[in-house]
Every structure is written in C-alpha cells, then in structure tokens.
Amino acid sequence: MQDGTGTEITSMITGMITWVYCEDLEKAATFYHDALGLTLWRDAGAARIYQTGPNSYIGVCRAFEDRVVQPQGGMITLLHDDVDGYYQALQAKGVPCRGAPETIEAFGIYSFFCEDPNGYLIEVQTFL
Image (cartoon, rainbow, N blue to C red; front, side, top):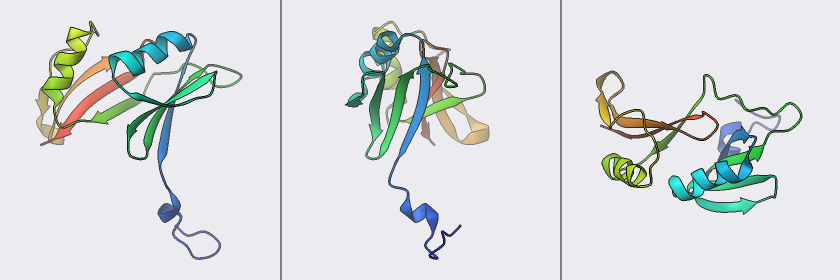
C-alpha cells in the first residue's frame, strides 16, 4: 500500500504499541512490570507503556470514555527463546498459568498461557 507520494506505508512504521485497558492501573502495572518482568518505558500517569522488544510495547491504560476493559477475542503473544524458564519464573512469582508449556504442532510453536489481572490472555511462545 502506498501513500500519496508513492512511498510504501509499511516502510514508515517504526514500532508498535498494543493497548490494554484496566480499572485498577496499579494492579495491572504490577503484573506487567513485576510478574512479566517488562521494563517501564514511559509513565504518563493514567497510562504506562512497557517495552517488550526494540520497538514494541504494551500500553496499560485506565479505562475511560469508549476505552473499556474488553479482553474477549484478543491475545498478546510474547516471543521468548526460553519458554520453560519464563514459565518457571512466573510460577515462582505465583502467577497462575493455564497449564505447563506444550508443543502445538499445527502452528509449529511451543507455548503456555496466562492472564493479566483484567482477563487479557497472554501467550509466551517460541517458534519450533
């Protein structure tokens, strides 16, 4: 896809933020920072942005106006080389997971799932 100048629009993308909304920002922030171990990149008061990679982020924001807590049908996938180690770290922190890591042959991945305090599904996976 091109913009009006003939430049490929996708070549202009420099990063990505996936936003999740919450009622209790402190509880959600504690999960993303302390449990998942993500680095706080920016604190905007009512929203916090955590870095997941060189130019990728998860934004956690207090619900407002038409931004509501709506985890159904969505999922955040974090790619990690040591899925077992990440799983063990979450277990040591008492984070409930939906079972141990397993291979999903249909997609060629090895992963496990947990939820943030608002019910957003989080998968930690590696490609096989």
